[in-house]
Image (cartoon, rainbow, N blue to C red; front, side, top):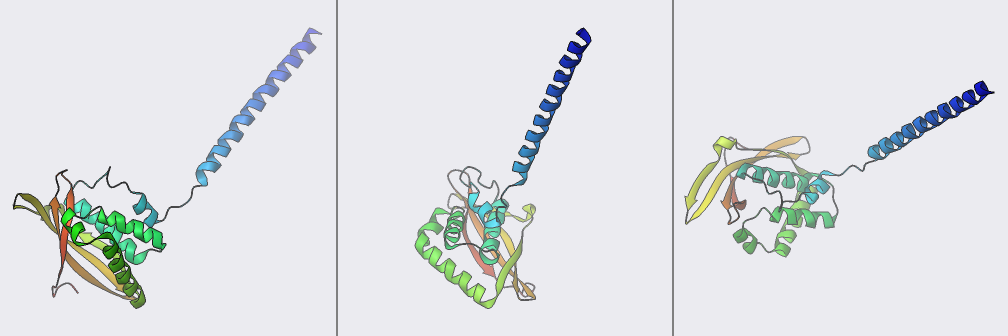
Length: 193
């Protein structure tokens, strides 16, 4: 009788251990399944979700890179009109206060939408970019402000043809120490088409 009782207790314990092990494995599988079922976020959504005010790019080069990332998204990615407005607002966060005053939001967005529409009608896309090396950033002071000047080269594609557009970017340091885009100028250069 004692042997039967020991056997029954041992069988029950073994059954409980196997059952607990099964529950742990089943829950782990559910957690893994939940992690795998993530929604892919588009490049436009990544840029829109970027918290620029809390994580502002620390250098002029990084500001220009973010400007270029947004520019590539404008002319390459698919998005809704609401996302375009949000992306335009992200771009404006990089602009100097004087540039913002000279380009009110409504006018800026209207001009941006027209330019994007014109590019799309011609089949033109901005596919990539390159910025000046960090050592090629020209820092200078003028009228009590600190400025930085660097180049941005955008690769423009139309069908199978590719060309380059070179811009000289001018950034001014604001009161919070952030480099803001003060303006830019298209550079006409025989070596850059």
